[in-house]
Length: 172
Image (cartoon, rainbow, N blue to C red; front, side):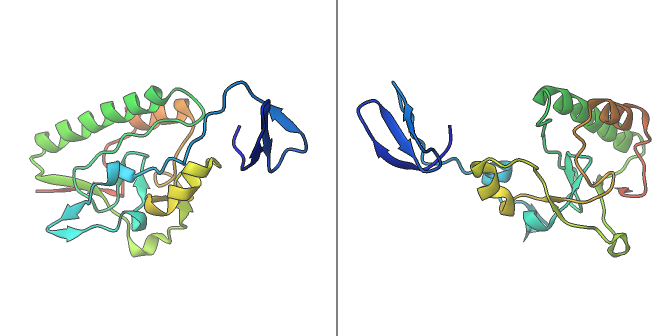
C-alpha cells in the first residue's frame, strides 16, 4: 500500500487516507524511486547535448533526430518482453537494411509541419513514475509517434510494414 504515514503503533500504522489503523506484522518503508531515462546518460550528437524531454519516441524504441539509437521499453499492460522482442527484431531489420543500402546512419525525423501534440510518455499514476516524467521523452497523438499497448498491432507494424516511412530517413 502506498500512502503517507501518520503514526506507528504496536499493531500497525495509521495512514493519512485510511480512517482506521492498518494492521501490519511487517512494515517496509521506502524513500521513493526516481527513474532515469537511459540510466541518466547524457546523450550527445556532434558534441551537442540533447534535451531528451524535448524528443518524441518513434514506434516506442527510437528518438527523433537521434541517429542509430534504440531504447528498450515494454508493455505496461502485458509481458515486458513481448514488446522488447518485437522492437529488437525491428532494430535488426533496420540495421541490415541500412547496410544493404550503404547508409552511414538513419534516424526518425519530425518536421515542423507535423504539428506534434506533446503527451507524457507513460500513462501510469505511480508516484515514482509521475516524479520522473519531466525527464523522459514525449509521445504524440498519432502513429508512429505514440506508444501502442497492443501486441497484435505492434506485431503487424514491426514485422510486416515497410522500414521506410515518411519519418525514417537514411543518410549515405
